[in-house]
Image (cartoon, rainbow, N blue to C red):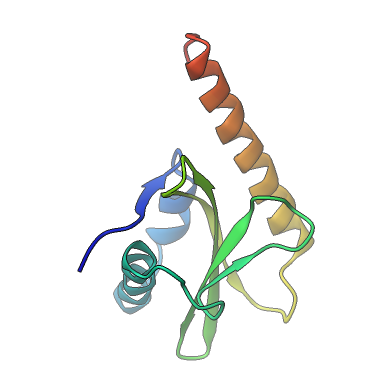
Length: 121
């Protein structure tokens, strides 16, 4: 089993979502994250682009009757950067969650540009 993607957390956005969850939900999320690292073409059941926001994706996790989403993006080809997550309670992904993720993604890439220019974060 070869690792084809690396997953990293940007700041503490993911941890703030993940820590209060039950162990069973955490285990399910860990399974999906591991799958993303080893499967070339991840099924859209687990990984999908966000319509209207270039470069933003959601990791989709279902456990029992609960649905969880974790926003992320790709960087440097095979690096998956995790942002915020939430428990989904409606059919459609809430716009406020997408806007929050978009701002976090913008912040991440701005910091990456600063690093390349030799400036401090």
